[in-house]
Length: 430
Image 1 (cartoon, rainbow, N blue to C red):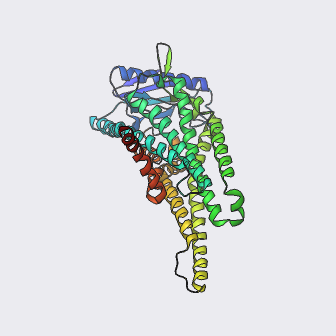
Image 2: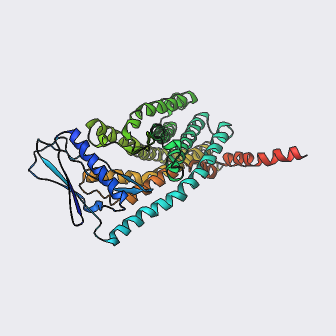
């Protein structure tokens, strides 16, 4: 049932099962297609759902979520309660934009971020791919003065970051912006990319946690250091983490449905309405976001705090011993080596914390405040969320710069790699 009065559009249906919810969602989708055809727009801020009769404690309704991005219209079902009693009728009111000023304000905000994305993602890919490849090549040579254990972690982190750039930035985001008619947007291919992207992100984040913990053990737990901080242990941890997060993301492709069909071929990926209704999917959403980024963020802060505490205590004790030993003024080689390792650890951890801070704050806000379940269909912090995504993707390109700044031998190897093609050309010319 659809009713229109002035600039209001009302959709009504008796919803007493998930099938009825799906039918109502189809009605909403039809209205979206109608609005798109006649170049009309809905006002998501004042969209609301009402119920004609008093409801019991449990019910669910279909809500319309309007987001215009890259000239596409998306909609979804949002869970409010799990069950609606028989013969209870839900009326969904979807007003049109009441003022041209409001419409233009929303369009300007969305178009601004779209313009940023059109420039940001290609630049990020152009920088991220070569710098991570350079890091992998240079670190794999083993000439940077780092232990084999540290080297294995850094190579694995660079490989995961490279996979993040390839899958999340190039194959998914740039493909949607620039390559709208390619096979990358076929729903099966899109689903596979959306499986690889979070797997790479999870691996990159948790390898940073593993590296931080390894350095904490090396500095603070001398008895455990000889058994844990070894090349063999690091390889086992790297393989285990990669396999676990590959298994954890297996349900990911089933989250998405196609949003249109062209020549009987499903195109694109949008979040299925079941993702907001079924308890299993809601639990999956919570687990996914707790594992990345909240828990790693807290663990890195904890390990760094414990490491700093241990360093301060050890430095005072070592300084006192040196003062008592004949007043030697020579530099302590052990402290020098330890300082280089500590600077690298804090640089990598600090970069992660700063670049993921926005995403973590946004996660805490919308989970604690209940924005996810609000009736308002306009997200007032969408810009904040988008900024968090841009910054977390930037974290996949920063480690090489950190190595260059903090490690003198890495700088030397980097210069050798850059000079090598010119040296080779010179030899061939002669």
